[in-house]
Image 1 (cartoon, rainbow, N blue to C red):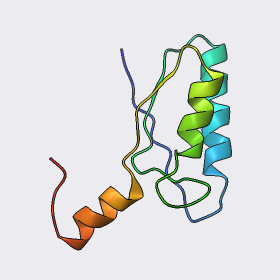
Image 2 (tube, helix red, strand yellow; image 1 turned 60 degrees about the vertical axis):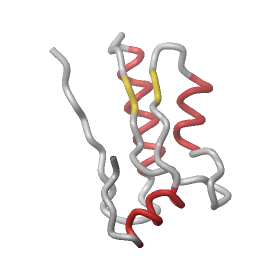
Image 3 (cartoon, helix red, strand yellow; image 1 turned 30 degrees about the vertical axis):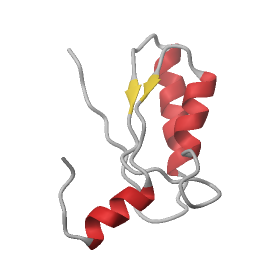
Length: 86
């Protein structure tokens, strides 16, 4: 039976990336098959650079899949024009 675990920060700079990577690693060690999705990319350098968390997961796991997050510029465009994602 599949389950969904959603980690949500309580504020900024609370260490969610570190906690997320730790949870992923612990579950992988237990043999749990995972898929990871971060809704909006948060690049370390700003702009539309690759998302740091997704990059780390892809580089360090051969069993966990990581979907591509939406670029911040795309999300900002949707919000500014009051559009919905198709």
